[in-house]
Image (cartoon, rainbow, N blue to C red; front, side, top):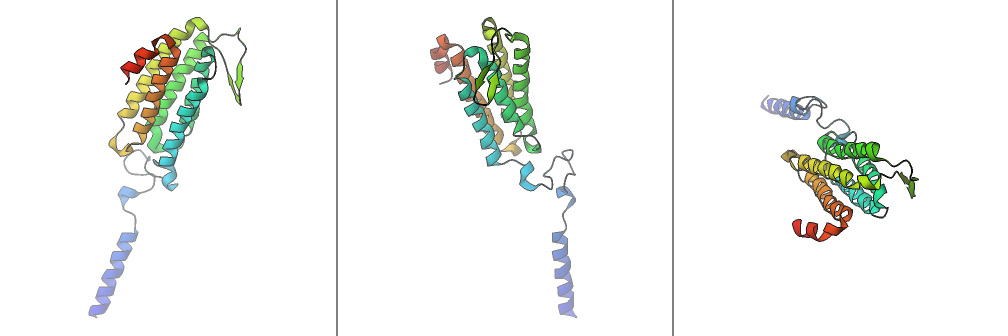
Length: 197
């Protein structure tokens, strides 16, 4: 009788541990259903995803440096669009995606306001870029810098639960921001190097 009771208690203990608690229910609880869904780690933060986003920004901006200045803003716009799209369907990266999309939106407005219809489009690999008017470059640069600053701030203010993932994306945005400023203002390259050393 005693051994039967011990077996019953052990069985009930194992059974209670195997049933998920409400706090870990799929898609429910706090956070408006943005917990880790049944897709497992695919919706959460991961080094692979973060590396892809950082690499997309870094390589994209590097590629943009190889085209004439009037084409770079459309190149940057496409780069940030691609980086943000890598975070679609990943709830834990929602705010990072919004930050990158805000840069894309700002650059889209730059293109709509300052596009130069008299200049032919530029093809580079599979990408095609539109030009802006040369006289609009200083204003477009100011608007882009403002968007990058805002995105970096959002990323750096991310909750602790994001670990260093958002910070790594912010670092990519910041380093590219410094590069963009120095390249867009060649005469001020030394000043920027000293300011961000």
